[in-house]
Image (tube, rainbow, N blue to C red; front, side, top):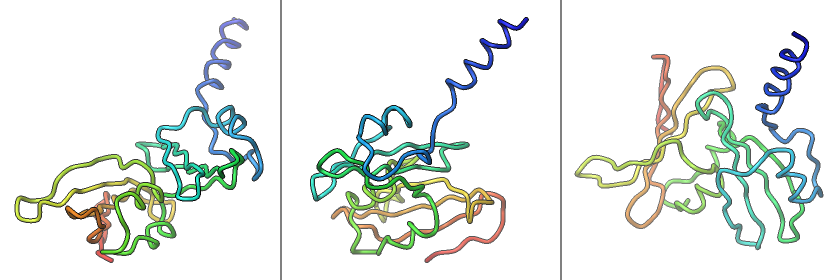
Length: 161
């Protein structure tokens, strides 16, 4: 019985994934990979560094972004699917590439209506860490974010910013 319990505990711990809290700026890329695993997406940064993205949580409602400098050292790890990061997106200025560098991979990519023909990227998140919401971004043919809408998945209020 103890062996079965020990095996179950080992499997449960192996299934746990880190959110990077134990990492510190200056840690090597190998330490990030050892702690958080292989990233779901790696995006090059303009300065030669990289952003590694780790979608986590229930239904991908959290995405952790580990930012590494050109030297391969960790700058920071942060959860990017929240109001603070969404506010950095500027309609008709922010590009598709910048959105990807900021928020990581969307949970859904599609097309808008026949008239608009814009791309739609959706991210699921917890509004102020509590309620399930959907952030939907429109991207035009020139690769610029045209706007966004936030939708409550519990039937509560929603709004356009």
